[in-house]
Length: 607
Image (cartoon, rainbow, N blue to C red; front, side, top):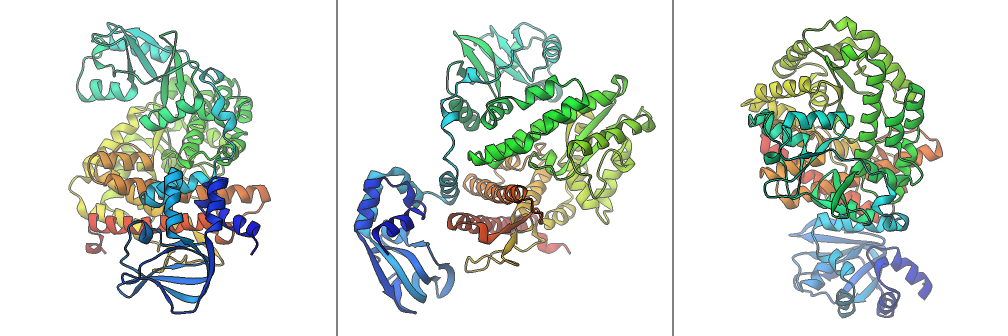
């Protein structure tokens, strides 16, 4: 192998590609090629390691207490920990004749002094290691976004009120200006504060704060802001760091407007137009359809630029919600629109659906209304969505189906049956309903039903155990030696990883009365109440993102090649070594999570 070939080979292995040219040349100069016969021991507790091994051909087994725990093959590296910490509990033995590169320990460790990113990869925990590896895959097309400024994107006009303004008056102004929050000025000990929907719910609905009292005392402060001339990349970082969906834009020390996450990511996806603005300005169903057609291009561009799948899914979900809301407004007569709640359920309700798969929607009707009045409009609603490219649900979980379009009291009866005497698809129906959100109409109709669900399940340990047990239905496609279990060189990432995480977290959210529907948001809430440890939660989130990301990559590839396969099957042969490692690490975390769910809900005690 020539020096050029060696350099190409080394650059193909993460994290060596992040080394500078000088660092890479230094590494190449100290590489030795070596050959070892089968059964030779390379590292053990009694045999100290002097090299980092890089497999060119062959297999090496890692054994702990005489049990094989991992196999290293082409392009794998081992064992950095033995060099960093100067000891190991494991034994590394050649399983098939080995050809490898040996990198001298001193040279390897010297790279830590000159390259912190390289160092961090080897000493960080699994969650950060997965994240670091992902950054390598998707970082080539960010330059345009990195130099864009806040003023380059759409900034919403703010709803600003004085601190002495009554809450109801402020809410009416917010509704009139179609804002999602209220900026409060001249507070008792602050210049600016902010009030959101969740703030109102907390103080007015749950703490009985008088809705005619001044809004000032309930405003959150200090507010998180960004300067009008700052970089959009800093806005994205701030939103990510603070887990918020909007920033207050400041110009000349005054509130200028609001930067919404949706518009930020829309700009990231497409610099020429903002789809959300098109949806809002649509005056006909035809114009609305045109606005919805560009979603696939947004997804492709965001994915190519390395955006986390979580953000892509949230963006597309919010755009879809705007489509639903606008279409509902266009089709439903005004006298009926507030007498019902339009729901999206399942993956749409969790904000985890990106490509249009099928429709999962429902309508809760006020008990004092006639169900028949809504029928023609909901049949039309589903037909229009079908025309927009939203496929018909094979299970007929749509508002055109009377089962999913009925009065609130009828849904209460259905919830009671789902919980007390489930049969057939009832567990599935209950699960997708619990994941529902209201996108148009009277949101309180759904809130009341979810509170009924929480009340019904208090102390119902057996029911919860049965519900959680569904997360253990499918085997994780990874063997005891970290080898992937494939069928025709493919793995089902939904059954193997995505569904167990979604269902397990859904079960924990149900048990702990968490209203959030998004899986990642639920995980973060579970950390806050000490159900999940922070480190493990981070690993779970990164694993979930990896599985969703690989599935999206496969789906986009099929769309480009106009092939049609199972939407959840990943072709292992299409993955590079880094992606394979990420997939294996993610499945390991899934297995750990399954053990946690089994223990937490004591699923072995139910049949």
